[in-house]
Image 1 (cartoon, rainbow, N blue to C red):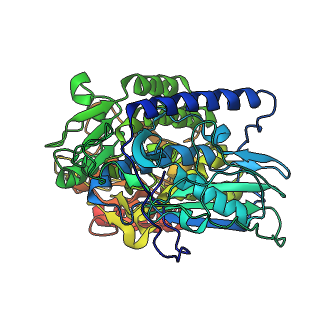
Image 2: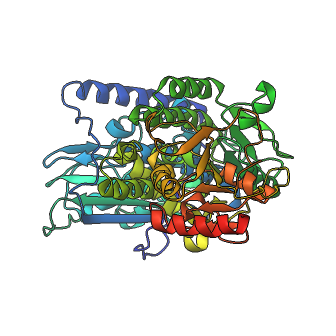
Amino acid sequence: MGLAHDPLAETDPPPTAEWAVPSRWASALFRVKVLLHRLRRGIADLGSRPALLARAPRGEFAVPVAKSRTPLWGGVPYAEQLYAQGKVQNLRRAVASLDGLVIPAGGTFSFWRQVGRPSRRRGFVDGRMLKEGCLVPAIGGGLCQLSNALYDAALQAGCDIVERHAHSRIVPGSAAAIGRDATVAWNYVDLRFRATGALRIEARLTRDELVIRFCGETATTVATTVAPAAAARAVARSCATCGETSCFRHEPQAEPIGWFGAYLVDENWPEFQSYIAERCLPDDELGVPLDGARWGLRRYAWDIPYLWCSRSATLQTVARAIAIRRAPAQGPARRIAELRGAERIARRLASLLGPEVTHACVAQPLLPHLWRAGHLGGRQVEVLMTRLPMRELQNRLDTALAAHPAWKTLGDFRAPPELVEAEAEALAYATRIIAPHAEIASLFADKAVLLDWRLPSAQAWKRPAGDARVIAFPGPTVARKGAHALRDAARALDLQIVLLGSALEGADFWDGVAARKAEPGGDWLARVAAVVQPAIVEERPRHLLTALAAGVPIIASPACGLAAGPGVTLVPPDDPAALIAALKAVLGEAG
């Protein structure tokens, strides 16, 4: 039974229940009755249980039909904090199974058919449940807040109520006082209703509320179903506060489990490591793809004082690396391998997001998968941004591809629409967006935290003697990194180019340009007059940071994430004329 509050409830306080100390015999008899009820419901449903509903994208379901909002935490007594946290955790698990479901016209929704049996194996924990007139701990306790909200929305949407059961007692602050409650107990006490027109369920946990929306396909007038009159019911007693020490269910005063944070990270960026180290607390959890220090992999070596690795996803990370390595250097297969690998890692690390975690700091590759699985609702969420949001990234590449249809590699980076939508929703929900990338931070206004890039150690650069016309291109040679604009500028100015990345646009891409690969392990900055990257998109400008630390002039687009300043000239992406002008200015200074 959830501790929901209906803002429409305006009624005198109901009386406290007449109550006798429960006996073990009565409790055992109750359990036998429950088993019989479950057996009877199972038999009855063998040939007639409602169909399992399918998910569908929002699509044409754009017309709001009903909405219910109830608070998650309001008015929870100190002694009930432990079970309030458990209730919210149970709501996370259940809401994830409902969001996006479509009830066809004439179709029947069944709460337990869709949610399934609550068990620890499925991530459900102890919350409060109304049992024999008392609020007692039970796995899955608190799900009645969800069934109450669904019943309320079904009434608003004019659905035919097939099965609904009122609570035997009123929980203070719940919807039972005005008769808009619907208790559930697996599997024999169900909530079922029939949709008169096709409806899509949207189920969300915000930081403070449970929100249920029903959306339809057309803007038709809906006749609200009238709820039955509320029967007189007494107030339930909680085993945590009733003070009846002689009862076998009596609970000693339990200390709440507290409030903690969890950091679910991916590859180690020094900027993010410093950010976490400044804010984490000793009891916070750290989830990493694998223990980089143990395996000697700097890429995953997170070294944060006071924070030890609570959970890793070693097998999933190795599998991701193998899948990416086997995929072609370009094309959708590589992107799919990255997304699937991140999903497996997110699924593994999500076990750290227990009911006590109120603050989650999440690496962007894991974000949409954690959001879709329902792990982030009801928490403060920060996101460690490592690239543009997928929607912005794909829109930018689509625009460039439309302008240059022959540049086929611009069509390589795409993600499934449902994942793009999930990331957009999660980013909108997030409290803070953390990024060292100036352009990415600019997309999120006041909730962005712009970190300083960490410059590597680099040998001081000396200007090349004479008429140096050598520049370096961090690459790889691919359209999204600005290779085409640079090639045009190099041909116009008769420049030599030192290439640091792979040649992904074909072996003959640099024909007509004096281009050569940088020597492995050599000082690639030694004889260059500038480092140039007019990228359309760029996630991590590490080569540019090395050049900046050494004092080498940089010409880059805003997409590279650097701010304009001494030594950094910004030019628009895909603009050879602007690039040529910038190169002339820099080369003139160097000469």
